[in-house]
Image 1 (cartoon, one colour):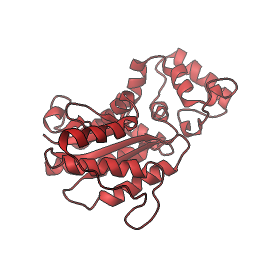
Image 2: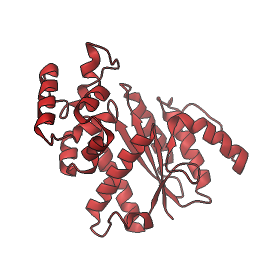
Image 3: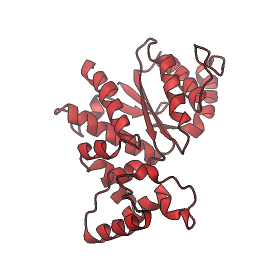
Image 4: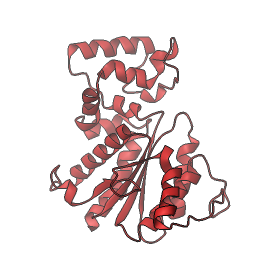
Length: 257
């Protein structure tokens, strides 16, 4: 079975990223429905039997693999093959890809999906791209998809939020008046870290909570909102780029399969 490795910050991010990817694939292939997806590929983590792996667990996963599978990880150099120092996340991403290359010996891993909150650190995305450049032309073929949420994955939720009743419309209008901009259209501007006043209203997590109230309502934002709408709103949050990466890289794998 073909595997797509998913590297995320949380289970919630994994659900968001994989569902969005499935919707993009289904848009491209009219024969690919919810029931048949499981027969063409599976979302997995670095360890067999898992559905995703978290960034915070990478060191432990590598250490466990060394013990269990006799994996000899390459020496860490701190720079790419051209001698350029690695940006934030570049080093750990290369370690992940080196491990994936080892796992490809016994598993049909065709792609790795990196999902990362930028958290006001644009260099994280640069580091991910450095890691991809180091591995993209190696064999066996491995597609590397980058989903860099700016500032956080909650911004993608807001991109997909469309008021469904009068109460939600009213809440959104109140938030827009406080911010002087629409948080669903310009969610990349919600960069506050604090959840205390007066910065609270500019915290993307707080705004999502005020607008949705629960996980089921959040899910509608990425599961039901039209992909065209998400592409249009997600230009500045990294969502549009992620959708495009799925179109360009995962679609080719399904075609060839």
